[in-house]
Amino acid sequence: MFNSELLIKEFNFKAIRSSGAGGQHVNKVSTKVELSFSVSNSAVLTAGQKEKILKKLANRISKDGVFVLQCGESRSQYRNKNIAIFKTVELLKSALRTNKKRISTKVPKAVKLKRLKNKRFNSEKKSNRKKPNLN
Image (cartoon, rainbow, N blue to C red; front, side, top):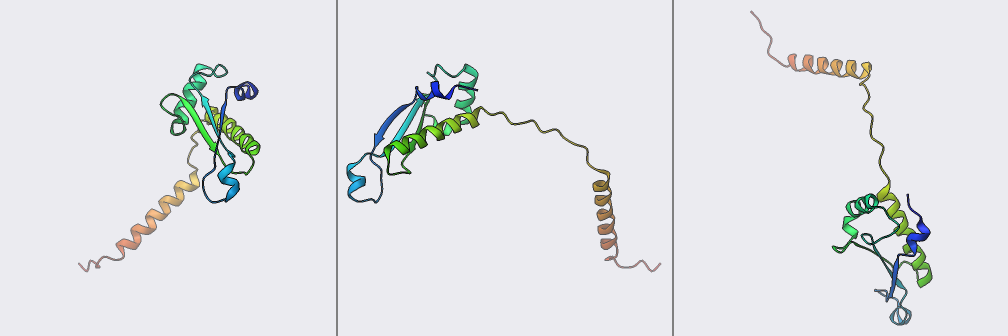
């Protein structure tokens, strides 16, 4: 995978004012944290990992290859910073995770027989709706 401690050192943080209601506290304290991370210039990630991240997290990455995440969940800047770090590392790990290839299995005999039985039942039902042949 990758070393998360080395990766965290490449993160850039910026404190900004939170939006919304909150009165005096929210108007004078910058508690919201914006984490930015240049995926394309990372020394920790390999070329293959960078490509995978750029592809899977394309909606969160700018044209310059910079991943941006904002966190304003808490009233504490320190807590918001930790939440942003945790979310970023988890997003990067999930982007690098490869899904297991599905192995197709054989359709069970009982399922085939059930389908044929239902077809026969429906066929008989519809044939009983026809006018009888009196010849």
